[in-house]
Image 1 (cartoon, chains in turn orange, yellow):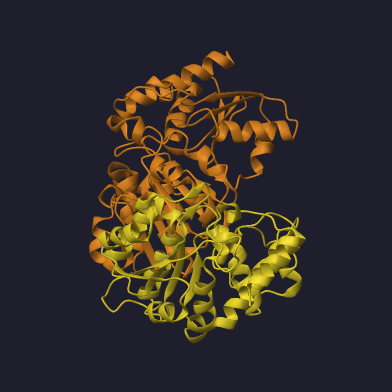
Image 2 (image 1 turned 180 degrees about the vertical axis):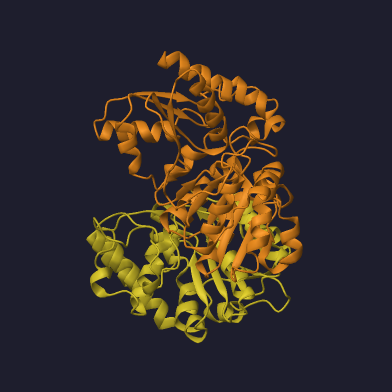
Length: 322
Length: 256
């Protein structure tokens, strides 16, 4: 089990999700006997330098060839290894999309994909490196679990869960940068595929995943001061989707879906499809990256530009509720 | 092995004819001797070795071969390319029946096999990985990505056989991708490269074994598309063609 530690949680946040992924793997290196961590020449960007030194036999870089990376990972998985694969989100979800479809989807090889720097977290590296369509791409392929941890503590729980249990084939989506605000200040209950309610309020329901959950949390706290009370739910598991979400939705008139992804194919699409299927009529507002390639800049600048910063989220909600 | 090949050609024709649909006869017939070598000899001796058909469209050939060695039942054999059947133009993974991977999208089998070969090394497990790819398939960039990983990891438990039949979907392959140049290309990727007549069983048996040079091995097997059936040989209409009762009988006469 992954141990939450209040003081360490601050350090985890300071280090950021990519470095922490590497650190968590380092901790797991001894425990998971048949562990293999593969990278497409992005070991350093995955915080895996120390892992590579300590467990050279459990690490493999195949160079810059993501299609091949997925194929090799699948061969290792077939032979009983617990495989984690890392590269930047679009290079895996798009460049190697068909390899993922055949190997993880069609054949069901239990590879865990760790998509680094998704959303707009690659900041100045620009749209070529952003994960804007990755959820859309992966969720159109059957059978692949999708997890989007809200902060490094949840990332830790997710990675431990995936490494110590059979959760593959899966896609773990890392968003956020070093020094981000934590979502979880104290220990919390993580269960695979389950949503986590972060606040209760009857004025609106906010569903979110990834690094922007902490922005939502700040927004919700500020809205309380103007007497607007919102429920905030962290939907880190997009597949499987916790069915409890629909009871929550039924209790609210207005639903906000906040995510660092294009409007097409993310949580906004997932929820909308379900609401139509179950004939649930609600006002659903998506706060997301729209469907245009935007500018580049610092992470905070980009969140603000796309109206995903806490103050912009707060504004959007209060405008709608008042 | 000669009898195995003859029987295999007959089974291929039978399945194709029985389905009544167009099927990939040309590319299945060109690899008959390669499959015969593997399934009547090599894989019988090497219980821990596996075979992956990366040129998935030639599944008709592999399927008929698996029927011949009794991995696939008669009932299933007769279901080839019928609605709802698991046995169609391209392989659908079924380990019990000896189908090691789902293929059909070209250029993917080699990476998968490289992963298995690396795993075998890590587990210190016996057995080799044999992969059959097409010459047309060598246009896929992912083949060369995998070729690099194979040399970087000194995969001397990996043997790739290239069915160099000189044709692809739309017709004859360019000279740049014919046997002579394929040898150069694979050599450039630092593989142990051997060239042979892909219909000569003795040559194939000699060559289809792991390299002793601490490298992966590539065998460029020069073959004839549609081999063994006179009206199909080097006639790309039979890349994916439908037999009539008359043509089926005519084809059978060629197999003596």
